[in-house]
Length: 343
Image 1: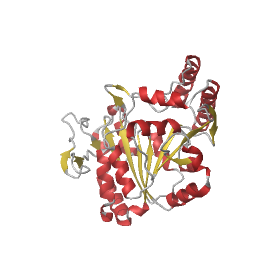
Image 2 (image 1 turned 180 degrees about the vertical axis):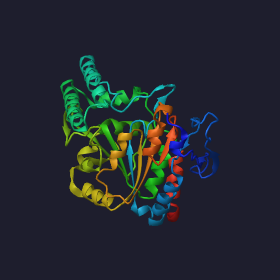
Image 3 (image 1 turned 60 degrees about the vertical axis):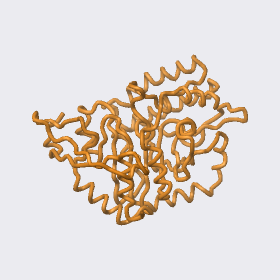
Image 4 (image 1 turned 180 degrees about the horizontal axis):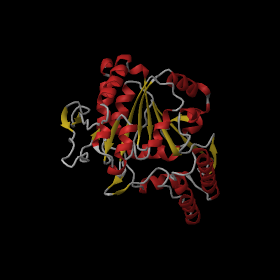
């Protein structure tokens, strides 16, 4: 890890939430300063490398008001916890068991082959993009051929070790009240994410749209096709906004968004919001705002694991970095600040 001079050893004071009235009461919790060894202490919850730049962005967004703000968020490891009861939590894609051991094994074989290629530092992005398209298309084909049913999705989510971060519900509720649109980007499966919302959140939010791979089921609940373009880890951004759809309250509602009433309006609405709050857990998530002609972007990164190894890269890329699978309460405080003129 680089010496703290790379970060100028600037470690500001942050606000952390307590519990009452939408966590409206705050206490100040100072971040740790540089240790005597000359290395940054890693026990704190949040790191900001350039507080002055962050404050300038916050002031500009606050001045323009909530009507100019949109939120872009990754799902797995960002809205959901990285750790679950002391073990690595499952992702929305990894939790799926289609009830056919042969095809579950085939999908695992694809993962074992393609995932190392995805994270390889030597493969050019153009080549990786083609490889990811191959991987996703093969996986989707196996899900159809293996007879995936929506009932299997429901059972998979019910058994899954996946949960939202503390504070996510309150964040969504606040953003809904302020009519701030939220786009959740995922290279996984929208239908599984919706089922996670149903079983873990127990409600939908009118301001949230999911941009992800969406399934088409027949009248018996069996998967027969995938809708639209394939979304993978290298193209999940606002260029794929035509795939956006609301969270459906119940299975079977997905056909209702096929009319042109909602998507065109949402597309125009988002394009007019030139201030972005981006939430991600990987450096690649910064690309989710590609396609947005933004004036200000505050990027919040969740560094869930390998903190010491990755902190320098994350702190240079993100405006705010939350460490060690932190809660979402700091982001709730942040959006409260950004919307202070609208209270």
